[in-house]
Image (cartoon, rainbow, N blue to C red; front, side, top):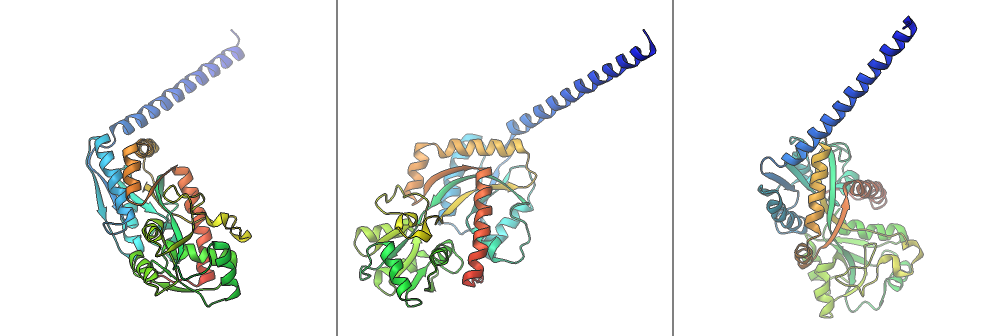
Length: 339
């Protein structure tokens, strides 16, 4: 064999060995990732909820925690960390080990905070990994029976004819309900006075009592009063009609051209600290999908005034980024400040 041929043969041999080594490395890494996912969870899992016990976020977390405990054969605990508009709880998750054993019950409140607070001690989109959206709480606009307009189109026309004369109640400053009405005002170029309450129950009670004519609240808080004739629900804020009230149209269906793309929802899902192994994130997402597909879970969620609305981590991130961008415009438009 000539020197040239020997050199080529040696090079081919080295390349073959390098490729083989790379293949073995890739296989070993894949096996290691699978082993990590299969070993998860190795200890109890915490779900941090940034709202107090009893609300829709806490309810979602506890329904899911119960089923994951059964599935994983490990205790899944719910811990309520409230304060600073939910930022204290988020920061606690960001600072936790990135191993999947501490999760955040995230919600539409997180993009609101991104838009509302000039500086946060974390970056929502860099310091957390989205896992999945699981439930949604539809919102709706309702009026007292003395309001003569029967639908959102005529209601909008009346607001335009009387700028600044109408007032509306919501569940509080910088809540999803507040932003939902401000988005309506922003898109339809309307003017109305905001009356914030400390929670949806108080806002709805005053609407029922006639102290205010208009209220934006969670749909489940309004439906009993529509059934009794004490309120009239004009439209839901979600993209599609709610199974809880299929007869109520969406804002998109109002016939107001500016509202063709209107959509606003209160949603809940799960996130983990950034750096959590992808196999663990994939395992949690797959198990959440299994849990939310259970008929008994859908029934329980519906009984709590929520709807199952599963979406992947990728879809969740897209929704939250879009919301944050849109909400920044609403904050500037309405001059909203955190309490």
